Structures are given as structure tokens and as C-alpha cells.
Length: 361
Image 1 (cartoon, rainbow, N blue to C red):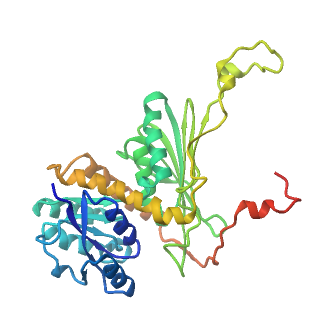
Image 2 (image 1 turned 180 degrees about the vertical axis):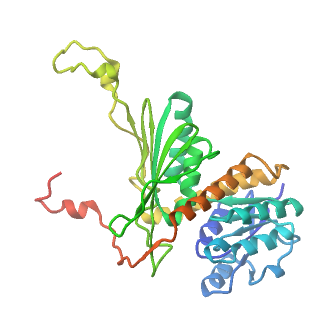
Image 3 (image 1 turned 90 degrees about the vertical axis):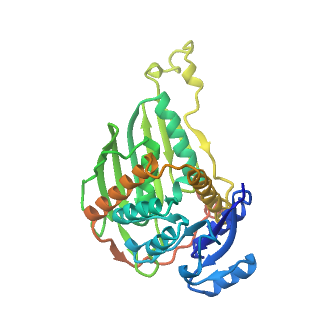
């Protein structure tokens, strides 16, 4: 079986797709880049020794099997949806970066069926190492414990992948409706919503401010999720952080071992916290060069398998249609983002603070 020939559309975030494709030589072969002809795209095409296309019309299914559409979709003011549609009409498989309007998603799925090809919507963040670990652990916890609640927080720019994270952690998004709990104010930029999935109460807080100067990158919060069970709590403090597990305190521990040295309880030796996945040794360079391309690799592996699956309308298709509908519904309820100017941020290392001898830990 020969590798699938791929063209990548867009070279900003698309650069991570390029690296992921190069990391999967047995499955995919890069055969071109589609862009508006920027200097960066020209340099990448020259470096990777592939053609640079500036229009979809120049590409046929005799040259290309798969198109990675990594430009803004129609719902956020870009041409990504139209580009994806054009490729599908040519019989070329498409994987498109989120988000996509629910009406466009249905249209693209139907076009894929007519073109005898596959369409896949990629929300990216669920396949980032820490989030992937959180989701896989949550799936195991659903089998060995009762899920009591889920609490999540994110910025408006990454709301769609947040819904995907919630859905994968709980195993469904079906019949979920979020209702607003509060309206954000100048002093409280979080919009709080409450919902329920599979009898599990879900609380979602959305940071609804957007930097006018840098709306995509200047984000205070990515994803934070807490999954409460009757046996402990699973916690993801950040998209790129570590994953923590805190076993619950057993009611049998109510009798203090300090007062009775003869107490023999196996739970006393349990750690109060365990690290399920650690990102402690990762640098930002690691994320850009390894972690993000690896996330795309996971998506491309799934897409490769899906291409050889002849089913066009399956559970995954229905799941992402539900996610698109939910994303649109929440967007309508939240309303426009507060437009603000956020001053440039500079990362701070804790060791720089700890160098101050007066700092108390």
C-alpha cells in the first residue's frame, strides 16, 4: 500500500501538519503546499522540495489524495470551508482544522459522500499529550467509578475543542444543552453555563474577552478540566500541563491514626496525589517542535484508518455534528466577545522568584 499523497493548505498553523506528515512517511507523502504565496510558504516549499500552489484549480485527484485545510473556516471569516468544499468535489479527502459551522459541516459531509471521499474535522487539542492522557484516563474511570461532575474552563477561541474534550471524557455529547448562569461583566469576564451529559452535571466557564491586536494568540486561558468521581478527582490544570489524580478520602479514615496507633487501614498508605502524566521537563520549544506535531500525527493516523473505512455516516460523524451544533448554540447564548487590549505578556519562571531569599514556600 503506497503512502497517501498530501497537500497542506496554509503554512502558519499548517507548519505543524507539515512536520506531522514528514513524521509518518509510511502513511503519507507531502506533494505540495497551497497558500496565497507568502514568503514563508515559498521558503517552506523550497526547503521541502514540493510545488507551491496558489489555487485549488491547479490541483487534481490524479496528483493528490488528501488535503489538510489549515486556514480559517467561513464561520470565523476565512476561506477554509470553501477550499475544503472544492477539494471534496474533486474527490480528494479532506481533514480540516476547527471550528466549522454546523450547516457547513453537513454540506461537507454530503459532498464527501458524492465525491466518494472522506471529510474529517480536527479539533487538535484533544490529541495534545496532556489532554490525550486526561481523556484516556477518564475513559478508564468511567468503567471503575461513578462520575459525579465535570467542571471545565476555557477561552472563547478554543471553545470548540473544549466541547470535544468534554465529550470524549464523558463518552458523549448527545442531548446536552447548556444554559447560562450569569452574564459576564467588565470585572468578571467569565460566562458561566450549566448543563448535563449522561446524567453528569457539567459546569462550563468561558473567558469571553478577545484582544483586538492579537485575537488568536493572546489568550489567558486554554483548557482546564476537573472530573469528579466517587473514588477521586482527575485534574487537568492546563492544556500543556501535567495530569493529576487525587484519590478520595475514605470514610474509614475518619478515625485519626494519631489517636489510635493500632489502626490498620490500607488507605493510609495511599498518596494524596498522583501524577498521571507529567509535562514538568517540557519546554515551549518542545511543544512547538514535538508536542503539537504529535497531536496532528494522532489525528492523521485516525484519518488514515477512516479513509479505508467505507462508512460515510458513522458515530464519529454524528458526534461532531452534535459538537458543531452545541458550539453554535453556546456562541449564540454567550454573544459577542468583549473587545479589549491585553498588554504583551512575558513568561515568568518560579525559580526567578525563588532566588529571592525572603520568598517563603
